[in-house]
Length: 531
Image 1: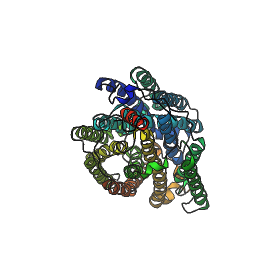
Image 2 (image 1 turned 180 degrees about the horizontal axis):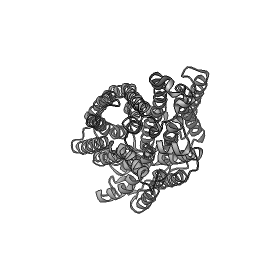
Image 3 (image 1 turned 60 degrees about the vertical axis):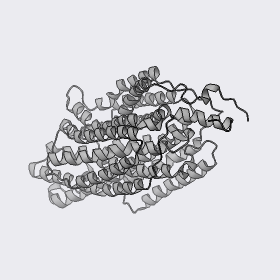
Image 4 (image 1 turned 180 degrees about the vertical axis):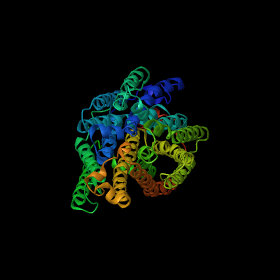
């Protein structure tokens, strides 16, 4: 096969976006990233009110969060693969459009069933935005300079993750808005993001040979992952961990994933190129991303419930109580990014971030219904500092160590496994929390509940305003104790993440952007010896 390479392709740096152009393009990306991440967390403080209005249970409580995360997780590899093959700008605008549709359906939902469907649509759009935003950044900016921007981007990711409960709480407590605006508020911002990207994002159109998507592989990966995630949500709640249903769902999910691996190994354009895992850095950062997802999402998503049900705070106050974590993440992510750009060293921040995250998880494992607000704020700030140094820099390490044509695959793999870890964490730890609350309630309330503990009613999220004072105090103590135990369960995953990070080798950061590296690699392939 013959090919020609334009002279400008061989000129490294040709057409590189200026810093002003990069910042303009990032404005649209950051708005889109913020609202897509916000969708996962803005409902946190609104969930008690949503569940009450739509007559849901503790299982539904978990699933409103989980379905969006599940859809986002399952579709990330497909978005990442398409980014390596098709127009990135068009794909990111398509993902934002899907997010708008899902948000409108959610905001107008008449019942729980429609709400869950809308969360799936939101998740598909959010999966595209989450994966593509980081891929587009790598295409525009050299890894050596990426820290300067990745720190800001990591902060946006973190703020979107943790500020959601605050925004949701304010909306719920504002009488003329209500919980439906937790979904509708993202629509104008998403439309703004689409407009900004259309005006400011200018990436060269890469002309590729005729390509095809491995739809069978995509279907098998999505089905296998979804089956395992559904099991992790239902096990211990709807059926026992050791049961026929567990064997059926886990066995079926693993069989689908094994078949997916077989299909992917033979596909011309696999969704997840298996040979990418031969790269030590990609493999280790993938494992670390799973563990970070379990620890961070699995633990923090239930803090809002703790603030309201254990400490008795309003949704707005519960949101304000998450500010220490936001500030810790914002500061550490930004400062670490600036230092990486200045000195070109990044592993020290991965190790420090993982270590601090472990400390934060262990501190939060000590909370109960009597924990002071000051101590709680310090504990959350510590966790935020650790996550801020760790999360985005795992992506940077992987992007720096793969060929330019695999940037999309590597980025989406990390995003996929981090989201999967988070979804498993929310599902499994949500089941643990529900069981622990039921058992503690049965133990402490006994006949006061009229036989509800351990029965069907034990999974319902209580309405604190309807409880008599003695029962109220017991329920608050139950949720405080159960939430502390939840962080203790999640802490070992943070410890494992630290161990994995220690084995990642530090390599010098590239000074060329993803598009420049791709042009250089293509030039070298067509004209051996070209530099």
